[in-house]
Image (tube, rainbow, N blue to C red):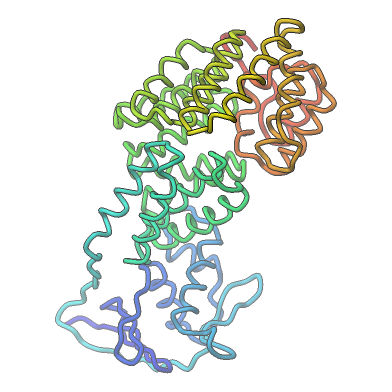
Length: 452
């Protein structure tokens, strides 16, 4: 005969062997880790349970952040309805841990067999998450909102499914990187969702990948990001998004060949994804292999003619190559693809003519000054970043660093490639760039194209 523990406190009954919490006979849905935390608390009711104890017993085989514990405690308090009354079951012991303060009675029950109770997932959950992930891998600005809706719908169906919260986190990161919403807002929700996913299941590759993406693009915590992404790839070596993000993480400090290698592995597993094409093109961009960038971005456009990254990369390549005619033509093509009205197109043609004349008269510096006159002077991060690049190209280095500092303060996700991306080459001989790279814990000198 086996023994099963049952605890009673207030209106609640916790059946440990059945992994079930009920309130007045109604089952309360908890994530697996939240259940484990609750068992630890009620077994030691009235006594302090330290944070280290939680982390070592609930996550014995994983390295996780304390924030995950906070997420679960918050979920338990919500389940207990602690917002409805003064006091509650769980007391926070500042800086140390938590104590279960409700009155608990315990009974021991003999059972023929102690079994874990697994709640079935709702029908349609996996379809929603799969649909959301496919839309993320499209890399399309127009698919992001649909991806977000799919993940939110999945969470509505089953709020304990880690992959749904992880998908939401990654989608918010993508929104921030593509400037669909302010990146600070996007990454804040992404971090909370990623931690929630990890709290539910630290062995979920999607959850580890989501946190790694936030730590890389949103927080510039290179070491922690690598730890999470490595863990994701240990769990699932074929995880497309983890391979892409890990490749980007390798490239940020100048390990360009390694980064491309991981992205090529993602391509082998997902050979029709425009996002994979765009990431490979970004690798070639950082290596100054511009003809290869064109090849891969045109492949992306064959699948999605309105792919935002493809148009931006193509225009950037033509500019780097000094082909101003193609650069201006690509900008016009992009405007038409996105439905720009005819009067705006005519105005854009006039601006293009002015840019062409500026380049003819003064070269790249003249073109950059002309472009600076066309962009707004506002506080959006994308504009600040663009002005930093253009001031550098114009030889106006004080203004370039002023705007670069503002972008760094805003932690703009595009700056993860500051050490390697060619748009910053105009600043590389200025010692002020070394100082900024040091602030970001990135190397000041990296080998690019066989040179250092």
